[in-house]
Image (cartoon, rainbow, N blue to C red):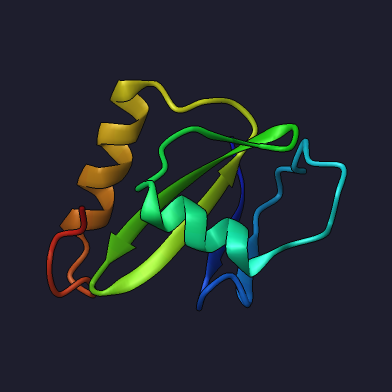
Length: 91
């Protein structure tokens, strides 16, 4: 389940009703740079996972408690690409 979505270089975030398994509240911009450079998918992030996606030239970092299955990830990609507010597909 998705716990948080970070954007604006990790400076802004959206919290869901799901509590993260991460015990630390510390964030480091270098972590976000690293996730982006690796095009991270299900990357370990303390006790949770981080997945990076880019939508309409905006970077999003999705913190989740369990790894996404390929089907879940593809469903997320499809959902995001189907919304009209995204001008172009992400990768």
